[in-house]
Image 1 (cartoon, protein in one colour):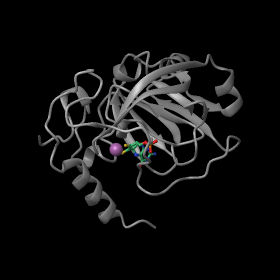
Image 2 (cartoon, rainbow, N blue to C red):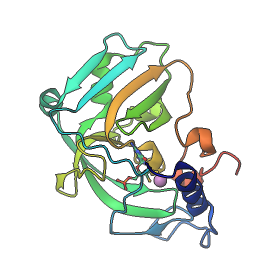
Image 3 (cartoon, helix red, strand yellow):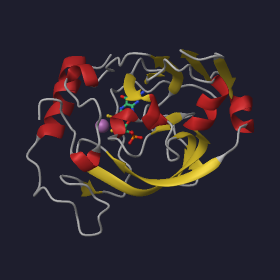
Image 4 (cartoon, protein in one colour):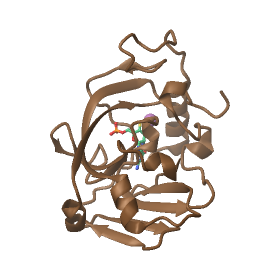
Length: 212
Ligand SMILES: Nc1nc2c(c(=O)[nH]1)N[C@H]1C(S)=C(S)[C@@H](COP(=O)(O)O)O[C@H]1N2
Ligand SMILES: [Mo]
């Protein structure tokens, strides 16, 4: 088992360490306090669940008209898109031009039909991780339930077989090893959000911590 306390403190220290001169770069794609990388770092809590395509399924539940349980074949049969976006981690790296391939979150949510009372979402992962996001933010065109990136299926370390990708938020909102999308009326802070990370996490507003 990972040493949770050490991992959590280490990660917060990384994210809080002295910011480089805080200004968005001229090309306007690297938000303030971020540095561009090209090696697609791996970040998580250290549990990397090994889920095969056969074992994988995605449950959409809570405030929906129709609860869904999507298996691999059903997922592959849904309309597939490629959306290229930039990926910003609160520990200060950004990787540009990530060509996420999969199904738009809005496509899956439309199948479940959210009730009018549904305003917030918890994403659930196979490693026990959770993160929260406003339903409206998940309905953006660029939010992808992804199975591939950079021309290949997602590796286990990057959240394969399937992860969420929310490009307009810091990457902790992009749940790896996705297994559930739960809709609520009230907001329910997730794993990092209860540990002081910002609820909204917009990298262009530098919403890193709720106390900043
Ligand atoms: N299930 C799960 N998803 C997760 C995490 C995690 O620990 N568990 N870490 C988050 C964090 S903090 C980041 S920065 C990104 C990193 O994604 P990557 O490892 O593919 O770069 O995954 C996010 N999604
Ligand atoms: Mo992160």
